[in-house]
Length: 217
Ligand code: HEC
Ligand code: HEC
Image (cartoon, rainbow, N blue to C red; front, side):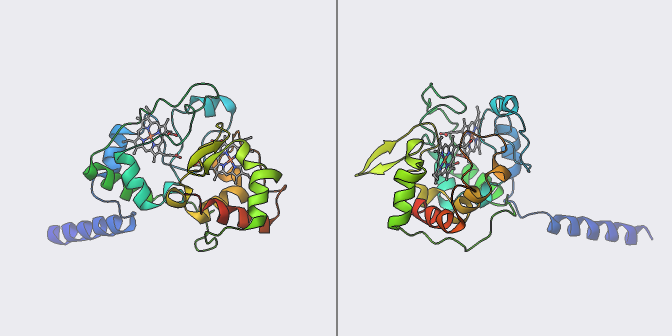
């Protein structure tokens, strides 16, 4: 009887283990130890007021697996270059470029953990990176996105500094996430500095703009 009970409980434990997402061993543990002081990974969005947004020390990561490209994430964690030209949550101070750096092993484990965090808002395979005159015009003139975001023009960063830089978006961001973000920004940023373009731009414009941003070198 006792043997049977032990076998049953081991079986139940195995079932529980296979039901949880497949993190590389240790990635979630390293994250808990070194990263939760500034980032949270359990969604949906927790910040509901400006005070709660300003209390955050770093961007939310609960949809990291839908937002980022895996190779970019693994290498950025080892060699973190500023993404936002200005300090997080500031409109005046420069980004101090002091993000913690990880070893290759820790970066790989945490990347596997973060890439497992997906948002159901993001549908896969909708946006293919592509340039178009229409999108270029919305980006530069109609919206204008470049008023708040940097991108490379003739190899040099140009544009506003209040938003994250979009230079390198082709390697950093998942094109389908860019579209989900423009289409329903509130799902990701209930409190935000970026205008809501969902009604100002129709679906076709949102899609071509996302495809365009996804080409940024
Ligand atoms: C002291 C606070 C702090 C700690 C600790 C910290 N981060 Fe960050 N993290 C930030 C800030 C601030 C940014 C924004 C950096 C930028 O824009 O250049 C950031 C950005 C990121 C990003 C990019 C997110 C985005 O939306 O652009 C990832 C991924 C990330 N951190 C992962 C980690 C991991 C993994 C750890 C633990 C090893 C960690 N961070 C520890 C503050 C922190
Ligand atoms: C008034 C300034 C402003 C304008 C205009 C603006 N943005 Fe933003 N954008 C921001 C800010 C600020 C963020 C950071 C989001 C936050 O934390 O609130 C952001 C975030 C983003 C992100 C996510 C980047 C990341 O790494 O997290 C993308 C993609 C983006 N914007 C694209 C666009 C596009 C495309 C347009 C034009 C339709 C646009 N933005 C217009 C300010 C702006």
